Length: 228
Image (cartoon, rainbow, N blue to C red; front, side):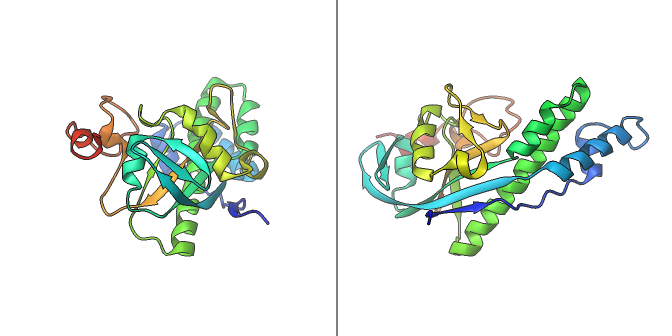
């Protein structure tokens, strides 16, 4: 039996009203009916999925961590895992079914809408993943890191992450391209770990006007905590 957990029956529910607001489709807009039709199609075919497994830390150096025999290289990850003995490696996705459906759309506006719909499906998978981890392992305060979110932990670290996680492609349909991007595009992967302090990779990223920013940039944090 595999030692990972697969969530392949995540319910997909998309509320039309907040989606329409996000896409700037007004209640009396002629496009609302077309958006509603698209949402109904997506809900009928969509199957968001996620998987995760528990990993145990075996070795540490100044800037590496070995988890279940797999080497990860990152000074920031290493420091963040200073007091951890186990972590949760994960991936979640909108699902290959929804991604394939989106590819059948020819209208450019509908393709744009389908991106937001796939993001909603990914959020559903992410919420289900987090809830299952918390309920199964009684987790308290945790944080996450994802390859490619920081220069210190580049996209190349997707390879050891996927190797450590298991049969990601076979179980939930997520695979890495030669450029280390995930397919379907609306997918995530990373490591969740226990922490006493709040942590977001955004705190170490100086990029301005980032739409995905979850915490303000702290220009002193690296020197205070991570400088070797």
